[in-house]
Length: 391
Image (cartoon, rainbow, N blue to C red):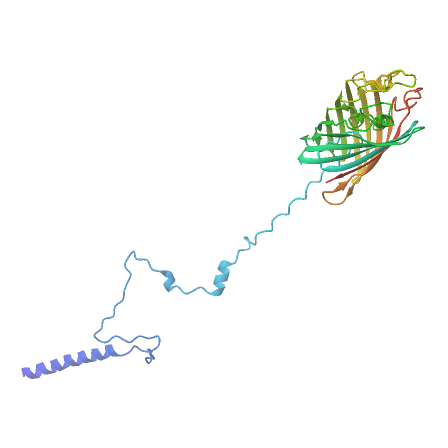
């Protein structure tokens, strides 16, 4: 009886274990057949399946599991937003400031240091004939507002009942300093001298060449004694003040000249009667001065009208002023003219002009403002042509 009871129980237990083992070895539903691609073999009944769970505090690489971004997402991420936009183009540089139009004086010095070549000539018509002094001016701007200046003088003279004379006279050189004190206001300063080497010097002051130099001084309104004072070295200093702006030029200046005789001090030959002549430089030193005012306005961008007044006076009892009267001690002249502008390039500009000059008192006038009965003092009517070219 006991055997019967134990056997069925043992067989029941074995059957249950076999059924359980068979159930564990079956593939999961819908698993399909094993193709060998992208699948792993099921673990055997005796193998243990292990799942690794990250412990607390361990970081997980999200990029290892996150799907790669799509092309649209990448483009969206890199494209700038409308607010950012594309960087705007750089602002255009402002146009260069235009230089004010400067009315170049006729007899006064320039108030602006520059590099230029200038040729001018005065055709002076008077009772004695015609005198044409001409001057070549070369200027080189060393640094802003500072220029070296040099002049070479020439004169032609055709007087009545005398031969025609044509000769070169003294060179002059110096420095121009024209600082701008404030916008449009300049302080031109000149320091220079001459080299007394012109024709007619060192001998008889009654020679035609010397007389031509004397007439040339009057033809240039007494402002260029250093160019035609052939027997004197003439250190000089001048200072002025100029306003340049809004098409207007207003300028004044003054100059002091010291003359020291270097030749021509010996008496000349006796006259026809055998008497000693006074035809020689009798002064060892002289002092001279000049002053002027210029007012010009740009009627058009390329046309400037101007008027100018000049005054020259001997400060010492100089030989040229020692005559029967005192009218040669000083002289007062005026000029009026027009000047145009021709630009060959941005840096090369010509400013040709012409002016009429007239003596306003003796000795260069005759009856204009004061009566003049001395036949030796001829009135001067002067046409002044000027061609400066700046670089």
